Length: 164
Image (cartoon, rainbow, N blue to C red):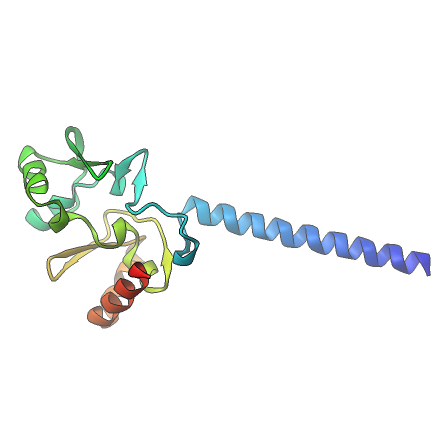
């Protein structure tokens, strides 16, 4: 009988170890890609890295030049305790005049993820401007998924999730 108890105890310890290891891997993967359920509230209100918003992308360039453009230190400003970078003095001036017009939706997290009640990091090369609002995405697949869905429905769902 004691051998059976020992085997059962060892199986339980092994099972707990395996579950703990899997949970560790999931959490580390989530941290790497800034993926978490919105309900965890572990994300910043703006997607920042080293206190710089949206991976140094120029938010104004998406609107004015219809392209992704990397901002530079020379043209940067602080807004709501976050550094925003721009590719030109004109883009910086436009942002300063009306920052809320240019700030991406959902704090610059992946719009498709937010529509699924998650946060996820972005690659600023994947973006859309819809109804004068900037949406950023994790990758091309997330951007395509957003585009293939009824955009208005995706936006309504993501807006609701973001304000919860």
